[in-house]
Length: 216
Image (cartoon, one colour):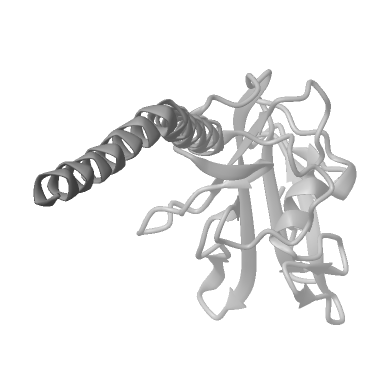
C-alpha cells in the first residue's frame, strides 16, 4: 500500500511537470512573436526619428536661384565751423537672419538656409568693426523674382523715405536724399521702389539743403 501511494504521488508530480513543460512549449512562440513585434516597432520609430532629424536640420533646402550683393551707405551730413562732417549710420546687428531683427514675413520661405540658419531673401550679416561706411546687403532667394530696397527696410523694421529714414525725421530744411551709382555718375534713386541688382550702389544722405548738395 505504501509503495502504491508513493508511485501515485510521483505520477502526480510527473504529470504536473509534463503539464508545465507542455504549457511553456505552447506559449513560447507567441511570446517570441510579441517580442519581435516590439523590437520591430522600436526600430521603426528609431528610423522615423533619425529621418525626421535629418530633414529638419541637415537636408539641403531648395536651390538658390538668385544670389548677389550690393552696398548701401546711410550718411548724416552735419555742417561744422571747419566744414561738413559726415557720420555713418550702420546696422549694429544682422538683419533678416534668424535670431535677429526680422520684422516682415512677406517672403518667408523664399530665403536661404545657410549653416542651418534661416535667412530672409534680403538680409545683411554683422557689420565689421570698424564700420567701413557701408553695409553689404545680400539677396539670396530660392524664387526667381525681383526684390526692392523697401524689402530690406521692411525686414529691418525701419522707415525709408525723404521725410524719414531709419527713424530720423526731416526737420526744416534738413531731409533725406537718395542716390544710386558711384561719384561722379550718381543719380537720384527711387527709394522703396529701387530694384535690387548686383551693380546697385545706394547712398542715402541726411543733409541741410541750404548748406549744400546731398549725395551729389
